[in-house]
Structures are given as C-alpha cells and as structure tokens.
Amino acid sequence: MGLWQNIFYNRSMRRLRQMLEFVRMRDFTLQYSSERLFGEERRVTEEINAIMREFREMEHRHESESQLYEALLSEVDAVMIVTDDAGNVHWMNRAAIEGLCGFRFDNLDCLSALHPSLPSQFRKLRKGGSQLLAFTMPDGEERQYAASLTSLFIYGMERRLYNLQSVAAIMKQGEIMAQQKLIRVLTHEIMNSLTPIVSLSDTLSNGCMFTEEEKSHALSVISRRANGLMQFVQQYRRLSGIAAPVLQRVRIVDFISGLQVLVASFPADNCDMRFDVRCPDRTVNIDRAQMEQVLINLLKNAVETEASDVCMTVSASDDGHWLVLSVEDNGGGFPPEVSDNLFTPFFTTKPGGQGIGLAVCRQIVGNHGGMIGAECVGGGTGARFTVRLPL
Ligand code: ADP
Image (cartoon, rainbow, N blue to C red):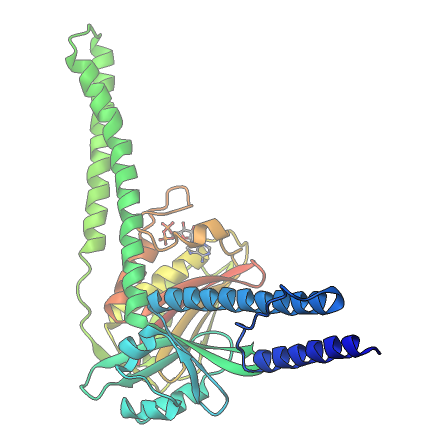
C-alpha cells in the first residue's frame, strides 16, 4: 500500500471507529465534512454521514411515536401499569398516578399504602379475561376495578401489562348507552303512533267531504293509535317505577329452592330445568321478590326460544367477590346484531313480545349494585344470561 493510500485507510478506519463509538452512546449527531476528500475515502465518509442521518431520523420517528402513544395513553381513563416479573414498574399512565393512588410508585409493593392486600391482589391476577380487584381506600372509599393482565415483550424482555377499569365507570357508561338507546326506541314508537294521528286529524279538519263511514274509520284509527301510545307510556311507567330493593340476607340454597317452587308451573312436557348450586350456604343481600322476578324473566325467555325440547340450567356460584347466577339454555342463542340491544327497553324480536323483561332484569340487578350480561354458548346453539351480585 502506498503512503497516501495508507493515510486514507487509517483516516477512514478512525472515522469508522468513531462512528461506532457514537452509535454505542446513542448519539447520532456525528457528521464529517467530505469537501476535501477524494475517491474511496470520500465515499466511506459520505456513507458514514448517511448512516448517521438514517439513525437520527429513526430516533426522531421513534421519539415522536413514543410521545404520541404517551399522549394518547395519558387520555385513557383506564389504569395501565407495565411491570416486570418482580413487580418493578417500568411505565404507567396518568390514570395510574392520578386515578388509582395519587403518587408515582416504582414497585407494586408500594400499593400496600392504599391497602395491604393490593400488591398480592395484583400478583394473583391471571392472564386472559377480566377479574375483580376490590379494596377499601384509607379514607373508607370502596374501589372496584375490572382488571386484566397481558404479557408483552419489550426489547426482548417479558413484561406484564395491568389494565384496570373502574367498575363504577363501566356501569355509568352502560347507563348512558342504555339511555341513548331508550331515547331512540321511545322516539321511534311515539312517532309511529303520532304520524297517522296527525295526518288523519289534519285530513279530517281540512273541510274535505267525507262519508260517515270514512269519518268513522279515520276516527277509529286515531283512537286505536292513541290507545296504543297510552299503553306504551303505561309500560314505560312500569319500567321506570321499579321500587328500590328492600334488602334481606338470604341463603342461596333457600333462594334457589323458593325459585324451584315458583317455576313449577312452567310447561313441563318439552322443558327440562336443572339447578346447579355450588355455594348453597353462601348468603347474599337481596330483595328476594325482585331477584326472583329477574330469574323468572330469564327462565321465561328460555322457554320462549325456538328449541323444541328446551333444556335450561340455573347455576349459582361465588367467585369470592360476586355471587354469580346464570341461566343457560339451548334455544339457539341470538344473532350478533341483537346482542347490543337485548337489554334496551321495548326491544323485542318476538311477534307480540313487549321487550320489557330483560330491561326490568337489568334495572333490578343494577339497583342491587350488580351486573347482568348475555352471551351465546355452544357455538350459537344456546344463550347464557349471567347476573353478578356483590357479596
Ligand atoms: P320479550 O321477551 O318480550 O321480547 P325481553 O326483554 O325479555 O322481551 O327480551 C328481549 C329480546 O331478547 C327477545 O325478543 C329476544 O330477541 C332476546 N332474548 C331474550 N332471551 C333470550 C334467550 N334466552 N335466547 C335468545 N334470545 C333471547
């Protein structure tokens, strides 16, 4: 190698080493002037500059993305915490700091300041599905969260993402949506009745000549629609007039055996009803008559499905925080587009149905501080309605 070549080679190697050093320090500002360079040395230098530029742009993109995600996640009301297996916190959103505890913490153990059981409640959470996390704050406030745990890999390291949603907020949101749906249904029903009334009474009062028969026909249509509307409003009154529950302590086994007596009058020839009580001695605070009404409504719906031989199972179990009552049937379930509206007052898919039963169930269960939900089971061969009541 000639002298000049040797000098160029050494300078290029020095620049390469320097570049590697900068990359290791995650500093991508390095740029060389290639003005007075020629040939291979110039090409190597320009290559180094281009690589550093690419790194810099990548870093900027990465930073802006992180800022965007951070900003988005800080707007989310759900509490989000990322930890490692030892419970060391690697990231948390604003809701975790402000909504959950009011301070930043670096390990789940610090949550014992809120309640001694909280760190172990976090650690007991299992992946998949949502579980209840409940505790009493030092000031006596009861908190309940629907909590879920997800595993994720960040830079090749396994991390745990805890996601907590306040049960009160979920229920409030459910209420708002239910109100909106109710308003839609009410408007639709009222307009359906009022439109012919308005149009017929306009026609009658326009001074046109009508035969007595036409007049009497128009008036009877008006009367029928007006009566229909009145009945509808009376039903609504029934729905909105559900009394506050009068709670009494009831043993599950007593509750279920009372229910068995009540449903004895159901048609028995094509209907098989089973009871599976897994927590007979558990007691729960309920308005017994109202809760019986809930289960009767659910069982009546199961009987009214299209199954030729209806098989229903009522089960009762407890998951430590909730009493879980469920009614499962083999009546074909419901299509996905129906599932959003099941509990909406006046929603029905039955000819002659009133669409009140499930709305009443939801109201009663809500008044008990509980939740009710529905899902299709057996690949769409049946439905399960689940009532959760706080223990
Ligand atoms: P109704 O029985 O008068 O229709 P509900 O409020 O009790 O009023 O039920 C509303 C709708 O929910 C029903 O029309 C039906 O479409 C659906 N539904 C209720 N229970 C079941 C069930 N067990 N299986 C499938 N669909 C159901």
